[in-house]
Image (cartoon, rainbow, N blue to C red; front, side, top):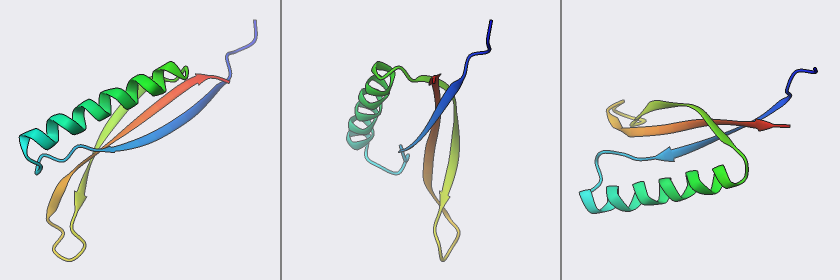
Length: 74
C-alpha cells in the first residue's frame, strides 16, 4: 500500500488581547467561521503556534499572532 501524500496550508490569525472584550468576541467568531470553512475544504488542523508580535521601534509586545498549520491528502 503506498504512503499517503499530503499537501499543507498555513494561515495566520490576529487574536490580540489588547482589543475590547466585544472586539475579541467578534474576532473569535470570525476565527471559528474561518476554521469551519477551511475544514469544509478538507483541511485538517495539525497544530498551531502563538507568535508574539512586537513593535518596530520599542520592541514592546503588541499582541499574539496565531499561526495554524493544516494538511489534507494530495
